[in-house]
Length: 242
Image 1 (tube, rainbow, N blue to C red):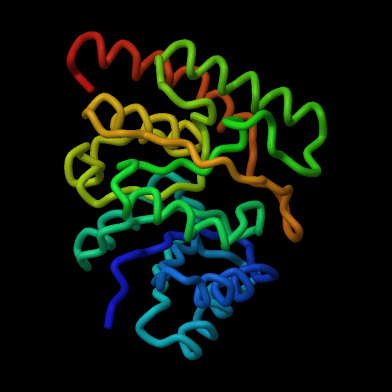
Image 2: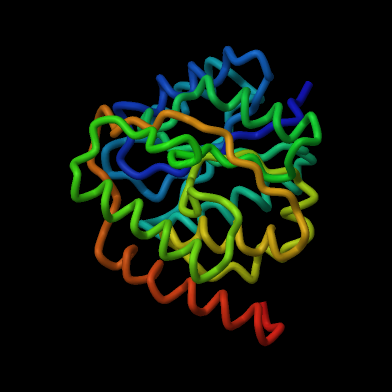
């Protein structure tokens, strides 16, 4: 029997992590299914997902894309999969153990209980809860969130959080095909559209840990997109073109 909850995990070169992440998700108190969206990883990530599919048939799914098409388009593809398959609770999560798989239960319960329409796993709602980041990256991330929150008015501290649970009604309402951001700005835009549509965003404090294996996907292009995108969202909201 299909679960009512789906965890979407975008991957690129996560062969060292993905089977372990899936195994952790399979034993949560809240039964979840997993969808991995792999952007043509040359390290064989997709093969490791297929191994997991053999272990957990009907609970693990794989979409393979040709080349690095971006975080935003991966999640939109995953959202469409979730809506088509009838999932009620749709989660976003990284594959590198920076997000603790055990916290998925907490995020789902916030939405299932009716406390939130979008439960955001937040690094900044209870001080700064980040382990093993260099000071330069911490300053960049914290400053970027202050910048985004100031311009957009979003009522959350961690506007760029990529760990969350979303009720399907949010995805049905906000016209996911209109989302244009593709890096970390995707998370800001998703939060902004949900908030402007009248849905409740609630932060759930988590501890974020720097990845254990592999290389960070952060780039200057991602930072530049986030800088201008918040202004685009602000003006689109003002002029009714969001």
